[in-house]
Image (tube, rainbow, N blue to C red):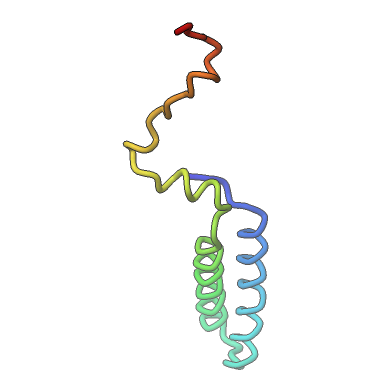
Length: 86
C-alpha cells in the first residue's frame, strides 16, 4: 500500500475536524453515544476524502498501463553506441 501524500493527510485531517464540529453543532447532542457516533462518522468521512484525493500524474499513468505496454521499450540504434557501416 503506498504511503499517503501530504495533500491526502491535509484533506483528510481537515475533513475530520470540520465535519466533527459541524455535526456536533447541528445535532446539539450531549450524550456520549451521540458524540461517539459523530466521531466515527467523521473519521470514516475523512478516510474517504483522503483516499479519493488524486495521486500525482506520473504514478497514475504507470499504474494503469497494460502489462504489454510496460514491457521494455525498444532502444533506438543511435543510442546504443553501436554503429554499423553500410
